[in-house]
Image 1: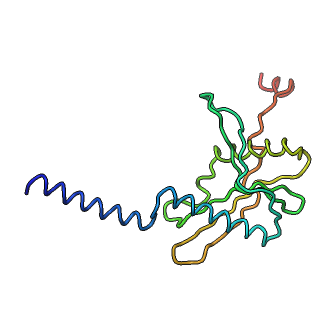
Image 2: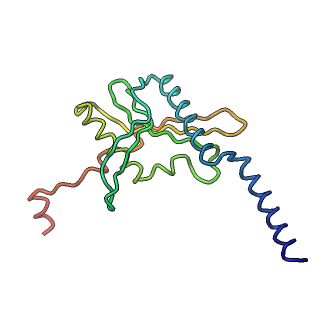
Image 3: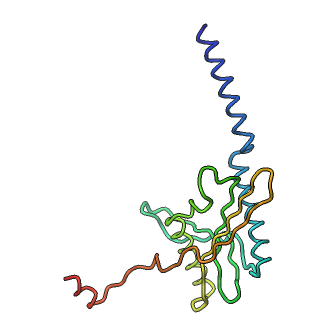
Length: 175
């Protein structure tokens, strides 16, 4: 067989594989963005149905600079009131949990970014004494089934990101 025929067969096989992948993800980034927007809409409805009062969605604000001096923008998917508690809500939407759990991407880096964004929000609106909480809503949207929505109240706290302060007594205990 000639090299051209072998290349053509490999190309056909690659095209076949890509078409299978595209069936699950028809538009790549556009599909992911639409899935996320739909998940946020379902999450907002779920929160309202469970007594939350929505304040704002997709709150974006500069939160500082990274180690290379580039500006970092933080985003909070939904900010809502649960009674008298200000809830900063991260929404995670997926088609399946075959590869990873829905909350796997809410790592310490993501939590820190949301926490920094929440601090800016509270400073902007002078909400210093209001109780707050960081919640996560997961939205699992299988292809041929109803969405499954779960709310995780208090998924993390701001305390884990507060800078440690040293006083003379703490320092002298180490020496």
